[in-house]
Amino acid sequence: MSKYQLSDEVLALLKDPQALIPAIAQDVKTREVLMLAYVNQQ
Image 1 (cartoon, rainbow, N blue to C red):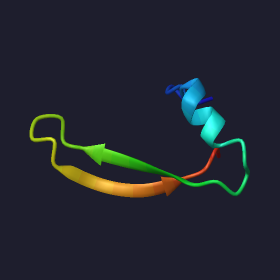
Image 2 (cartoon, one colour):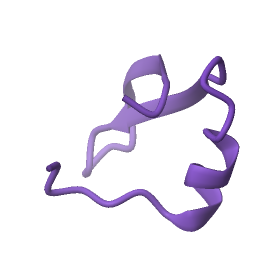
Image 3 (cartoon, helix red, strand yellow):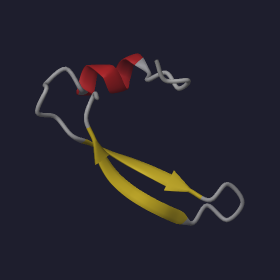
Image 4 (cartoon, helix red, strand yellow):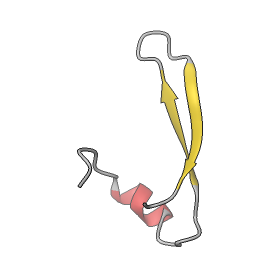
């Protein structure tokens, strides 16, 4: 089990097993985008 929980809204987007949604990692101080990835429910 992950230590992070997905919100109900995100889980609703991922009901389709083929669905991919963007996930962005940002620097906490500068807010610079460090990574953009597309994720599924797994």
